[in-house]
Image (cartoon, rainbow, N blue to C red):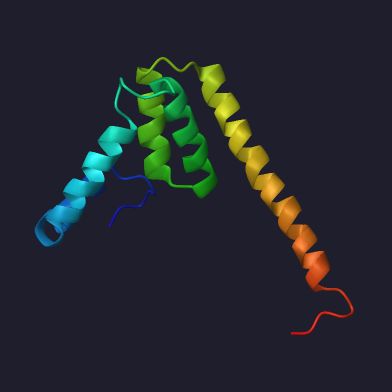
Length: 114
């Protein structure tokens, strides 16, 4: 077993999908390829990759962070743009905590029944 979180060797486990659910894997790959097609979309690829990076940071998927950081760079994103995408993700995570804190306050009210 690996002693680190992001292990490039984990890609070998795609074989399980290929063996048991090849139709779903193909559908997912076709969908993903359409979403991240270099041309034919309204949002330029660099910005789609920066959006994907910000989402990956909020979901804390290290594999997605790795893939979309590399793809954003290939699409022309700068280090400063990567930093801003990370801050966007941070603001949304903090905003979510702020907003859901208000729900907690509401639910803690005196007339709240469990």
